[in-house]
Structure formats: structure tokens, C-alpha cells
Image (cartoon, rainbow, N blue to C red; front, top):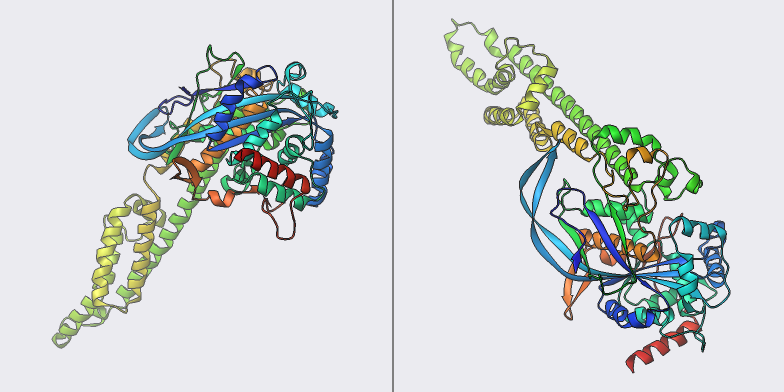
Length: 601
């Protein structure tokens, strides 16, 4: 096997993902290996390419029932052109030592090591070309989209594995095994499936590979809850509700997860994912490799110059009305660079705003302390007692001791200055730089004053000042702004390509007039991207447990993600669970009973 991620590399890595192209000629020979991959997987990532989606407006109707009717109509009249399957097997989760590095400009400083978790996966990817035996509708818009992303229609029509839609029937022209048999094995494997914005995929999978869709939406949901007994995960839901990214289309999220997962990033992660693939060289001719990677650009000036060349619509939604005619860049790496650059600028502004608030708070507390000390000194009884009045000297001593704490505070604030009316801004600046020493001095002074005058209001002000200084010393450091600037300079941009085969990246000059092609877009690669996003989310939020000698995803937040499917323009996701007031369809009941009985024999 070969490992795709070099987590010890200090440069931005290149990644190679092998994808096995499955078609009618090699389906039978690859069938045993596909079954082994499915049955041994921790989870399965699925993706489909369709010949059309029908009326787009109906797919976004306010009523979910109306949406389901539109999706059902499209699934009955359109077909699945290719089916992507990515099998992720979690080998182990081990604790490793990771070097904690921080960039300061062009230099990299090492700050010791840290214990982190490495989630090791073995991944097998399949891109299955399909040809529906029944008549189906082809939408020009969908065909143009697939052509723009490198879909091979010659391969699909000449070598596509044939299948039929709807319920099971005896069809002598369909060779076995078929994609319907493969889908049955997925259902019987009791392995969780992962999709990206998967509601339409689920409708098409049900109609094309399983059985006829029911008329009611609640019945369809009940069917899904029994079909996928191990659960359904939707990465679109994770991005919108858990990970909270600025954009949620697949390629953007995948590349961002790759960057965040890179072990050589500045901020050390508590866990990361490493993926391995089998070495298919000289063993399988039907393997294609998808390449992607990035390099950091030289300075923030380049990012700022390129910011005007990025297509805002593509950056937000992952598609553009102009398509190939768009004169702006569709480079996802550039979009990510701009997002990181803008995020760091916002963080710097927030830091400065917090520092200004801290400075004003310190100034007000110090000024109040200074005024209180002056007022108490003016009101001291010592100024009204004559030295000749010996009888009152004992009372004078007591009064002086009583005000001793206040005078000490005044001395501490004016210590080292020739003028007692020191400028407040200068005072706050000096206090901020010497936070630790000032806090210590004021703490001892306040303690002394408290022992002599417990009811003195000046003691309360000193306590507030001490608490404020201690709070600021925990949040600020002298080189805070310097560190932020260094991080900004080092992270502001990416992707001047090392090689033209990295289709998602190109030079600065070409970016102005062209857009990069997506990196190896296909249903197989889309399935891998979906699975990788989920694996990164699991490593960040989830846990594992050993059960029946097999690693199973359990615990953490994962149980809250289960059977939550994203719905566009809705505040809550679809919960895939069987309702007490709805039943499964008769077609599903017969098919599911038949599958279970055949699996036992």
C-alpha cells in the first residue's frame, strides 16, 4: 500500500487518489474484491451522477411533500450514469508525538511535541459506469455540466454496466452481477453510508437500484430507516450545522479539510487522518489517478491582487451561471486563500479591539484609584493636629496607620515618576507591559490595607484593579501582535502549482483569464471526497470502541449526526426514522424480506 499524506512534510503536499473504473467488461472479475471491501469497511461513501434532475424550482418547494413528488418524478424518468463507491476501513487509532510548530515570517520555530491521535484508514475507490436498459430522459444542462467536468460519455455508452429501474424482474439481457446486486450487498453489509446533500441521491438509489418509490414521503422515509439499518450520515448537514464553514459545496469543503488535516499546519490539531491505498501498478489496467495539491504563495500582496479575479458566485455556491464563459477564476485554492486571509484580518481587528477595551478599563480603574488616594490624603486628620499637642500624638499615629494602605497605593502608582500627575495613557501602557510586577505589588499593598481598614472603600477599588490586571495578563502577551502578523504573512495564500497535472491550480498570470478545472471530477472521486470529509469530522468530534474485533464508530457527537439529512432552505434537517403513524411500502417489505432470507441461506 502507498500512503497519500505526508504529515511530516513542511511543504504543502501533493495527493494521489487511485480510482478503479468498473464497467461491463470487468465487473465480474472485480466482484469478489468489491464484496470484500464493502464487508470490511467502517463506513461507505456513495455518490451518483444523473442524466437530469427535473424542474429545479420544484426541488426547492416550501412543502417537503412537493419536493418529494418532483424528485420521484425525476427518478422515474431519468437514470444514474455512474455510481461512486468509496470504502473506508479504519485500521487503528494510535497516539503519536507531533511537533508543535509556529511560523514567524519565513522562519519556523519548534515549541516541543504534543500527543495527538492518528486515525489510519485504508481506502478503496470505485467508479462504476452504468447504462440504464429502460428509456430515460437526458437534460442538456446536466450533460453540459458533466462534459465540463470531464465525464466520458463514450465509455458510459460503450462499456456501461446495464441495469433496469424499479422492482425486481427477470431480465435475461442483464448480465450478473449487476449494480442492483451491488446495492443489495451494501444494504446487507450493515455498514453506515455517507452522502453529501444526499436526499436526491437516496431517491434515485431507491428507484433505480432497489424498488419503485412509494407515493407518500413518510412511507419513503420509513423505507430508508429499514434499508440502511446502520444509519445514514450527510456531510452537508455536518458542514452547515456542526463544522460551520463559509461555503458547503463538496470541492471547497474537501480542500479545506485537507488543509486543516495537514500535520504541518501552524496550529497543532489534537487528531488527524491518514489514508492509504493499495498499489495497483501493473495489477489493474482500469485505474485512474486523481491529483490535487497546493503551494503557499509568496506574499499577501499576491492574494490581494488576485482577490478581484475570483468569481464571487462560484466562491459562494460552487457553480456559476456563465460556466466556461466566466472571465473570473474558479480556482478553489485561491478562494480558500482569500478566506484564510480575510479570517486572519478579522482576528487581528478583534485582538486590537480587545486590547483597546482592556486599556480603557485599566485607565478608568487606575484613575479612580489615584483620585481616591488623593481624596483620603487630603482628608487625613494629620493635617489638623499640631506637633505641640503631645496628648494627641497617639491618636495621630493611629490615624496614620489607618490611612497607610491608601498612601502606599498612591506611592506605588507614582513610583519612578517625577510628576504625580502622570499621563493616564502612559500609565496604562507601562502597566500593560509590566502586568506581572504591577499585579504583585498591588496585591501586597491591598493586603496591607485590608488588615488595617477592612471597611475602607479604597480596598474595593484595589481589588477590582488586581482582578482586572490578572485577567489581562492571562489574555495578552507582549509579542501577541508580532505573532499575529507573522501568521498573517505565512498563511495568506496558496497554490502556484508544481505541475500542470494539478488541474485545480495554475499560475497567477493564467488565473486572471482562465479558471481551473476541478481535480479529477467523477462519481468515484466525489465519493472519496465525501468519505474524507466525514473521516476528518469523526477524528475531530468522535471516538472509537472495539466491538466484535472490529472498530466501530461510536460515542462523542456522532450519535447526534446519525440519520440527519440536509434539506435546502430549511432550518432543520430531515430525520430518517420510522414514524408510528406511517408504514413501509409493500414493494419494500417484499424486497427486504427476500434479501434477508437469501442472506441467511
